[in-house]
Image (cartoon, rainbow, N blue to C red):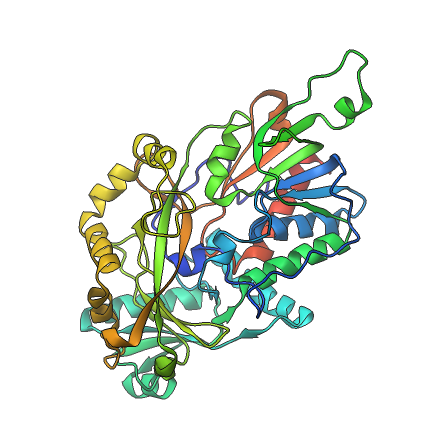
Amino acid sequence: MVPALRYLVGACGRAREGFAGGFLGACGSASGRPRPLCGGGRSASTSSFDIVIVGGGIVGLASARALILRHPSLSIGVLEKEKDLAVHQTGHNSGVIHSGIYYKPESLKAKLCVQGAALLYEYCQQKGISYKQCGKLIVAVEQEEIPRLQALYERGLQNGIQGLRLIQQEDIKKKEPYCRGLMAIDCPHTGIVDYRQVALSFAQDFQEAGGSVLTNFEVKDIEMAKESPSRSIDGMQYPIVIKNTKGEEIRCQYVVTCAGLYSDRISELSGCTPDPRIVPFRGDYLLLKPEKCYLVKGNIYPVPDSRFPFLGVHFTPRMDGSIWLGPNAVLAFKREGYRPFDFSATDVMDIIINSGLIKLASQNFSYGVTEMYKACFLGATVKYLQKFIPEITVSDILRGPAGVRAQALDRDGNLVEDFVFDAGVGNIGNRVLHVRNAPSPAATSSLAISGMIADEVQQRFEL
């Protein structure tokens, strides 16, 4: 096992990047449609693989790419339940390339974010994927925020983030003419990108290297093959059987799951503990009207407050020139519930009975009420935004898209920040690796995370 990793839950705590890094990804290509998957891989009719990756989001695709580049002689397949790749967390976030400033120095998350951002910029340059290194200001608008801002600046220096500087009011105005603030951290290496385009590029790399992508394959069961009386070669060589909801089967030697919003349920299929549970949090964004987009040049973020579990509303430019404002952080009543009234009785009962949500809610009651209030009343959100840009009015904004973050939560109500890996029980446990939690900001860190997962797979399965 990689020394920095632990099976089941490591240290728990509070999320720092919020939805902007924790949701994976953004919209597709400039047309909004994904590029078609390239040919050259094994055909969709192929029923057996050496390794199968369950989950076609950015972490699963990056991991599949890393594995096939390291082990080109192996047959590797990706299974995705939707008809297209990267349509959930990867397709519903703000697209920020984060710097890694928020994390504890020397932590795995800090290292992976800093390393992942550098790798991502390099990858985009190599592949001709458009991005903008537009920078970010973390702005203190109240005197009481300045000590926290200075501490965050010191943390960023310890994490090795390049170009950081503390700036005063006059320099804030030079960077963001319409932003008010007493002091700010200037993070020039923060950027934006279309993460879905990045994920589809990973898929293309994977297929060009010989990998196969099978969509419309919703995994229902993972089990050991029942050996036939004739001791079939398939049953011996490919002892894992993955079944979908249509009754179709895929056989393989090893399985890696990167199932995002369903990572806990997929893990349970091979006999794993149900903890940590995934609790879905929806983040709603507002949009600045096009004629008001001149008010924001780059990313503008608040100073994080350790009393609250999420980061807070911020200003995010997009690759298409639009400006997103948000997100809030409210409980979603469905794991893929992108609209306020989306509801699943199964998901709600699972949240209430089996997770630590009640404890989390009791610990952050006032924060939760405030988030719900802002979700219902635009004026409340605008009042908060005006602390940074006073010129913004309710008439300047529109309701925008939403994303759902897969937040791993332990039974004590703690947000799980560490990577959590798990396996099954019995014989299947030696052939399965579940990525139970790939924490925020996983999109920024995806290339670094994929290298770590590939290391873990190689050592665990002795490839």
